[in-house]
Image (cartoon, helix red, strand yellow):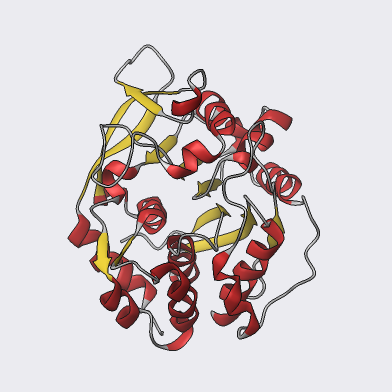
Length: 300
């Protein structure tokens, strides 16, 4: 395995689904990850930044820059108003002195300082990224690649509708990102994340000890009434380092905006004459979990 460092900027809506924190834990533990900073997006981004700070502090990584981004979608109402996992902030040390709306400027400045070197990893609604691409149209050309957990590309998944959460929460931002993103845009959707699931008790066992304990504590509100955890965002994080865990197909993604009930639907076609997106089509779930826990439990 290569020991070359991978420079990453993470954009997250941590604090709602537990999988954001699970992905952050993986990045903080990965020996090849140079985490240049974390930006937060969606309702109460300051609270989400405090959660990022708490996780980083628990992992001995309080030096990681954390910035707050957009609190609301571009054109529609916010559907994700609260941050249920914020209850853990009473028990875990964290920074609380975050300024509002610094994320886009931080992303822009950092990418411009290191052209062609940075992988942008987005695991939340795409509002910050859309604003970044709109305010500085050269940014996509300066990225190494953009990896996102967003969309549903090959038909309905059991237990889900036709749309994926990150894509539908801010559909107009999703459309901008797919239209304006870099040539190397990799999309990890529900098609491949839904099979990556473990029972709730197994999850608790894996995250019970050491620095991982904060993930265990954050998960308790998420697990109330749930019997399992799906590793949506951790799969996107893992594919930055191990794209071979997935089978990819090339094509073009368009985002529905006209039908209100379907806004954010991601339609994939293998049209080689249009802008190319790399879309994950299959996953080796056992290999993914083996890799994830080998990394996340290092020196736990």
